[in-house]
Length: 326
Ligand code: PEP
Ligand code: MN
Image 1 (tube, rainbow, N blue to C red):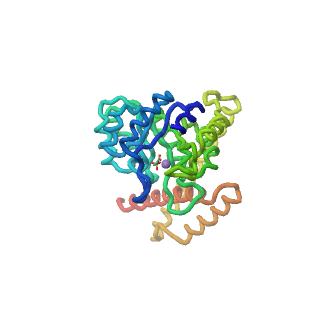
Image 2: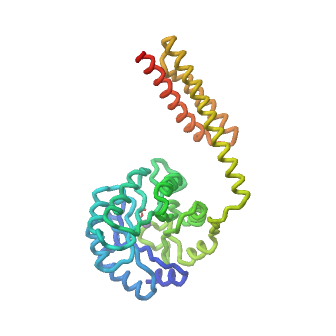
Image 3: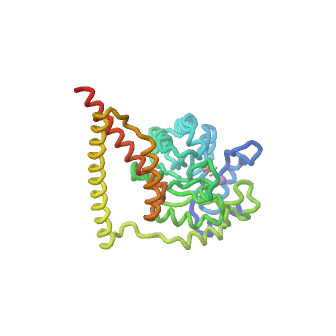
């Protein structure tokens, strides 16, 4: 109640309050469960905020509806589990309640899309998404890697679905909340879901990422929200340049593929294999180094070259196949 009142006073309109909390290992605090739903209703009455909670099973969804919770979200572990998502979707069939779907823990765009489809097919009209980052095998500065290109691709596929960002679970540390929130705003996210606690160090889960309602207010006040509709003339000139450069790139690639096909023809006539791994290795390393000297990440250059190389190989295979048919 203390946290809720402070957040309401800070201007927050929706209260994210996990009642059921999936923990990685047994023995962690897994939430108070159903009895806490009454507390949320009390918080709603006293603060006027809407109440949102995470549901992971059919029973959670059923209980949350019974108590009149205003908004639900499906957590990252649950979103990765099609049976669980389907069960929740079936329970919510025909109910008009906003549902947010977090990305699955693993960077699998189609799995996320599948969860969206299951709820959409159940007739849920008010759907939204939460980007909370993706598990990484190695230690990184993030708790979960942002991999911004994944939510961006989802936005391209579902332009009308609002996506909000969860900087708490991406950063995992309170000092990262502001920077990540600003990045999300710069990428046109529709909002934020942030963990907050009246006494962060005493929180029973995710201590390191909790911020006080006051700190949250400060974060919200210092965010720069850029005007997305305004396109200045300068920008359209720059975009024109990008269009032209993309066109040049495609033409260069087409030219490169023509040369690859000629090489394919040569290899065919001289009975050489298509793949010469040593040459390919040299190309990758060389070009990655060159790319780095040109202010690009070596990794990026490698990825681009790998894609180009695999298309070259495909083109050469087509040359060989055609020769077989003749
Ligand atoms: C949470 O929202 O506290 C939570 C468990 O997050 P996630 O599902 O993103 O791991
Ligand atoms: Mn948490």
